Length: 163
Image (cartoon, rainbow, N blue to C red; front, side, top):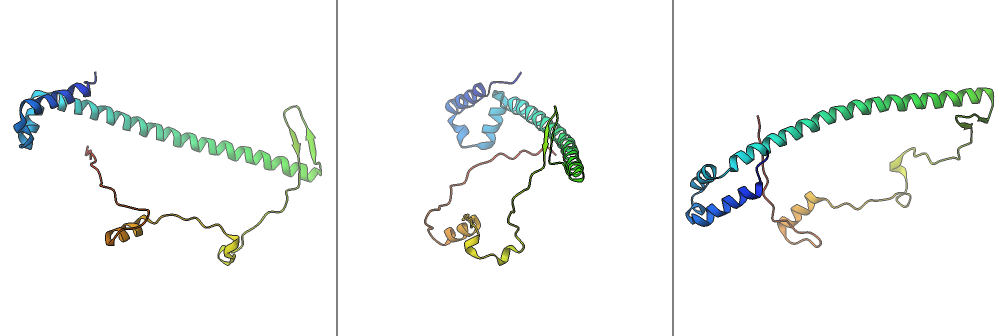
């Protein structure tokens, strides 16, 4: 059963209120929290659940990959059957076949644009996407202010090593 994180948090806060000297000594604080609360046991339970979730995600990823391969086979089979039907109708010179399962119709596709050499196209024939270059913006911010951008204060993160 997973310990209650709120209860553990309250236990820690209570200890820090009762013993304000713990604020000054990090090692003593860590030792007292370990000895007087379920902090470490809660973290162990959290880690077991995190590892279990990671394992399940990995197994699911493998399953998804296998299903994607299977889906690809079916999509290729469907395309092969489509192409075979088109070839047969072309050879027979039949433009429409009505059946209980489906109606097959051969139609002419209108012409479409083919890009032969993209770099040779004029600018007015292209779309340009404006995208901020965060690396360049960071360099500029290190020198001075940049309109429309600023640096964050950063944050803390948790690193978990299991090997």
